Image 1: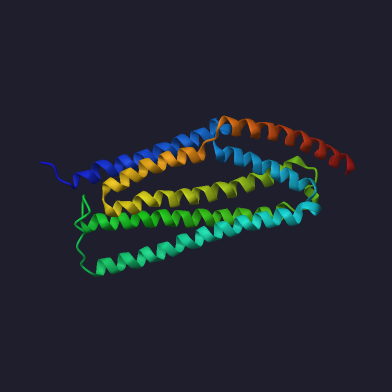
Image 2: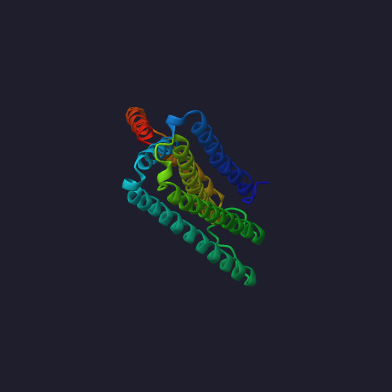
Length: 244
């Protein structure tokens, strides 16, 4: 005999599988098809930016620190939002457990109090992950803000590579924190039933695909730009080494 509780058993794992499968594919594309994803192209752009800033640290130091400060402010905003939402969810769960509340009739699915607690706990985990990732992002950004203005690093490629790696790590943690926010949307809609949750997972995976991938024009444009910048950076670094 069919029961509406069976929908949670079928649609919720199916929706989570769609989201997880998409991000597994995205991770594979970032590692093996670097020019196909926006994340990889942005990482290369940040690497070229670091080389450009560190060729003349005394001249470009103010611009570099202001740019990194803007990223710190963005990570701080997301971290503050995440921990605030965690507090709100904690208060909501404690008040809900203290009072006996009946589930809404419009929810088609499992309406047990145990599952409601699991839903809130899953959303709480997402926001806690977002908070931790953004805190790590702030940590790396603050570290880079010191390294990028060190005059002794002028003309030394290994120093520039080290700074660019830390800057990309900061951006990766920021992206992970943002993905945690994305995962919270279908989990939040799960409170209204498994059908909205499954539809949200499918729609969000489709939208993220268009946001995370690049077009042939974008790949060609970045390839030409990276080639020109790399050649100019090599010339500037060689001239800086000779000057030293």
